[in-house]
Image 1: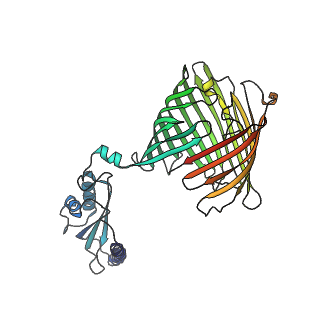
Image 2: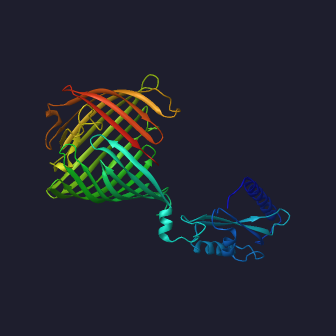
Image 3: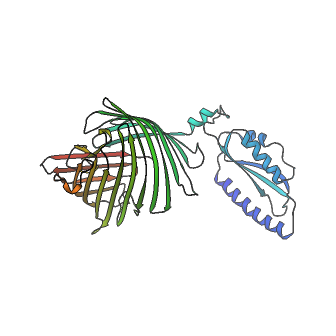
Length: 425
């Protein structure tokens, strides 16, 4: 049933009358629960009022006790037609405080229609889903396209079930679960199970993984986030097969106010993982520190330091990759691979349009440097450090982000790095 402007006005008037009647009843010392004089229904868009009133039963003329209200709510909940039910007690007039209105507020289950007022469990589930496109391009892997089906609040409040299915550069089929909490030490719990296949841009062989992972996150402060989790995957890397397990934790400090274009802020993540595979195990440390300093006008200097190190040699399918838009522009994505990686960059970003416009468009200039080396070796012993210098443009919109960087390597080669992503939240 559609709630019109006149209904909203009558509802406001009823609330005012109820408050006045309650005040008058309190002043006169009235303790009677009153008598139900009318039942009204709100929130239904498909189920007829008459059907809901039939479920409520013949309550007009009966005492409006707490027990009666609870019985009405239980009847409606057990009908299976509503996700949420609330029965409110209101006074109909100031002159007659014993004259009670029962207001029934309902939220119909997904999948209900005029021909099927009691949909089955599967119809309810699929009718609550949202289908969103996936389209992104990652340097070194190419275009990925597909669809994500999401179901909200099916596992309780603030929960989501997502099923991404993609093809192209990244072929995946997964089931992802997550739930957020408003109280307690854990803010978010997430997990996933499924398969992923993409080609390693350095070794140029297919990397196929089937497995599952879980993660817990806590946010003791707005700027501080703690995370811990683990993964187990069956890996097929060309002709090699292995079982890789990873467990670890991380700490993130994030003072950004606008993540799309941060200014005078830091974003740093430090983590430690324990890896095990058929040939042994290793400990891997990661540190990704980024700082953003406001310069003249709206321009920003962004600096970054990335370090990934391990205490033992890793199998090729766990090697870190150097090159491309991720850490070293001016070189092909994954042009080098190894156990350890160090990369630094400095970038000046200059917005041309205001963030209040349709989108944020700007230009940038940057210099990147980095290297990879084997486990047990020292960074100070590495002679070859690759460097790229260049510039680019970017466009950030509500759901679309596009960037194009042009960089020249130390050897004099020019590379173009294109990135695009479509995001729905």
